[in-house]
Each structure stands twice: as C-alpha cells, then as structure tokens.
Image (tube, rainbow, N blue to C red; front, side, top):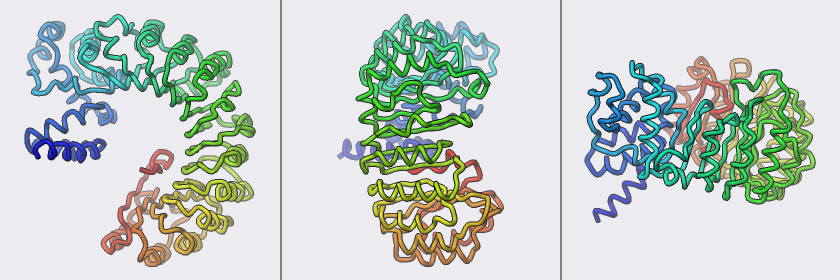
Length: 474
C-alpha cells in the first residue's frame, strides 16, 4: 500500500511539473512528498528562471553548495565558506543541461571571484560519470571540447535534444559529433555569417533525427547581409539523409533546395516568415499527405491554401496569423479548411466580417473542433453579435475552448457577451480567453465572474501582451 500511495503521488506531481508554485508549496509536507517532488523540479530546473535575478541567485547558491572543498579553494573567502552541503544531490536529478542558463546565473551572481574559474568548476560539476542528460543547450560563445571532460562520453551518450548556434566553435562541435549519436530533436539558431560548415557532419551523424527547427539568431537576423545560400544548401542536403524519418520541421526562411519534397512523412510544419517581403512560392507544389499540425506566421495565404489542398485529411491543428490579406483570400482559406480538414481539432485564424457565414460552414463540416481562436482586424467593423449567434447555433458539442482578440477599437458590447453566455447554457462549460488591454478587462470581468459562478464558463484568462505567444492551446 505504501508503494501504491507513492506511485499515485508521483503521477499527481508529475502532472503538476510545470506549476512550480504548487510543487514548492508541497515540498515541506513530509519526507516522502519531498523525495518525490525534488527529482521532478530538478529534471529541468532552468525552465523556472525566466531571467529573474533573484531566482537565478537562489539556483546559483544551490549549485555552488555541491562543489568540493578543493573546488571552493578557487573562490573568495565569502563564497568559499557560505554554503553547506545540501540534503539532496540535486544535480544528480538533472536531465536538462542548459549551459545558456548556467552562464547567465553565474554572470548575475555578483561575486568577486574569477567568473571563468567558476564556470569551469560548475561545468565539471554537472558533467560526470553519474549524470545522464537527455537535453543539452549550448551558448553562442561556448568553447569547450566536451569529449575531453572526464565522464562526458557517458554523460551525453543519451542526448535526445540539442540546441546550439551555427557559429559553434570547432572544439565544441568536434566533441558533439563524437559523442551525441542519438539526437532526435535538433534546434539550430542560424547565423547570417561565420557559420561552422561542420554542422552538416553533426546532422549526418545523428541516427534518430525526427524533429528539426531552424531558428533565426535575432542578434543579427535583421541586418542587410545576404542569405548564405551555400551554407543552407549544405545543411539541407545533410537533412536529406533523414528525410523519411523527419516528422516535425520549423523554418523561418524559404529553403534553398527542394527539401520539402523529401519530407514524405512530415506531421508537424511550422513556418515563420520573419523577413518581410520573402517569397514562399517553393511551397505551392509541395505535397505533405500526412501533415497533422500547421502553424504559419507571416506566410502568404495563397501558399498555405495550396499546401492544405494537397493534404489527405489528417490536419487537426491550424494556426495562421500576422499576414495581411483581403476578403477573397480569407474566404478561400476558410473554404479550403472545411473541405480538406474534416478532423480539425484546433483553429486559429483571422475572420473577416463578411466571411462569418463561411466560418459557420466550417463549424458544420468540422464536427470534431475543440478550440477556436478568432483574430479580428482592428481596421473596419466586426459584427460580434453575428459571430456569437453563429457559434451557439452551429458549433458541435465538442467545441468549448474560445479565444478572441479584443481591442478598444472593436469592442464587444456587454449585452452581446451576456447573450452569448446565456445561449451557451446546457452545453459544455467554456474555456475562455481574451487578448485585451487592462481597461477592456475591467469592462468585462464582473460579467465573466458571474457566469463562472453559474458554471457557464469553466475558466477564463486574459492577456495584455502580444497574442503571438499567448494564443496556444494546452
């Protein structure tokens, strides 16, 4: 019974792994709870930092407390004598080694000791025979030959995820190529210049590559230098060896080669056209029959329509934003979705006022839809009454998650919102999200709280940040 209770507690706490406040509050209940929660928190301790100096200093103190007396001799007297050995060997629970975060917390520690020495000692602390990492994040300026650090080969032999910059040093890259053969997910921050062409060898040496993300390096991404086509050609050709295995792909610039035609089993595609005026015509003739998730930002609708038309009905999540388009293409994208995506679960899309009737056809045809995020242009008018009437009249019982962007330029009248909630009675309680300003929140919050009490609204969230990141489905 004792083991059963422990297993149940583990499953509960594992479900709460992203809620550090709850987990921290449970640590002091008793020894059993603490022994279960600590490994969960320390599997990836970096994700809770959020660049807050106070949290960084606390984490730095815990890490330093693990150092041997010999290592502490390198530090000033205050640091050397400040920390006692911890009750847990926290570092042994760590499975994500984020060297970007390590570098940041050391730089913000505000100690008088030699920062270079501290970095070297902390790196040796994490890289040892007793720790096995699955996720590794390499900073831009990192320059260590990892394979020469004692214990590194065993420590990194099971790396599943690697994030690094394409200007990675030869020393670091040599070690990664030698050790990391089991990479399944690769996140590359692409430079405009100074790229290390041996990145292609790292890609080729990986035996299980299924998820590839090409991210822009924002530090120099928006400069005027030309795209390094020879480098892109090299890494895209190296990806071709994994083409039939790759299931997830993210890219921020059109590829140089015809690599999309090789991704015959691709299930997840994310396109983010950061560079304005970039042409994506290369996608118009691409056929991705097994595609399930499509996320596109700043990509022309004409291209996306062509892409969706060539799928085989497996698409269950579509997110499209940040692309100016007229009423014609807005109607075309809605029509394409409800004709080609009968299994759609989640949709994020700008809806033009004139095309609310087309949205209704989508609701009727896509009967499995669970979540709908409606983006509204701040230019022109929008008929919220018609939208809410359409949602209550034509959505299936499965649809209960809604997100709307609301601005003071196109507000929702209180009576309109009240009627929407009243008409929703008898259906699944809705999860509701608004992107809005604080003044808009004050306008609606009392009404929303009333319907939460009545059980019409299950939960409500609002954001006053840009909706690019916050409009995500759980």
